[in-house]
Image (tube, rainbow, N blue to C red; front, side, top):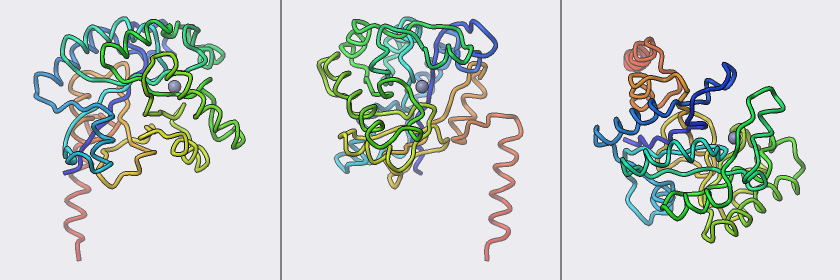
Length: 258
Ligand SMILES: [Zn+2]
């Protein structure tokens, strides 16, 4: 079984518009989800533990869940951190280095509500509390639209800037919008990151490309049943019909075996 799952959250706060509802997990819902992970004895992993296993420095964990947040929202810091601390759940925040203490300008230009991003002191506090800080580039661009040097600047320089801010190492990366091309992937590897997260859904096994790890997106209106479905099947599709289709495809694969 190679069922390492990486959960992806964005904003832990009440949505301010219908447009952002998909990205907003309410604090009550988030707490119920974290309590569920803890109460069900889910093995919780840091991204560094996954990197250690990919390096062969640790045994592959077989199953486990890692929690990640994209973008570095101040609301996520304020609302999620106490919950993660209470339930002793490790997590990584992917921050946009040049927008620390600013706002989510890449979203507000598209009509999303303006939200504050974590300040430098909040970032430092999160890091000092033992949570991982990863890079989500300098300015949240669509990486494939940049030339090779532009990609390198976003990927390499965000790492050093964030490292200066937290006084520690930044070893993990997440592609903005989940999009990348071969140049971007290579720039992540060349910059010295240990791994990178995409937004492709699915489980991760020991043979996964460490620079395109899969993640499962937790949508703002996902209830506990849907979260359980996502964890069980490693898919963003938590509709009631998914298990039916999943088992039907396995039966049909078995029936058509040579
Ligand atoms: Zn993002």
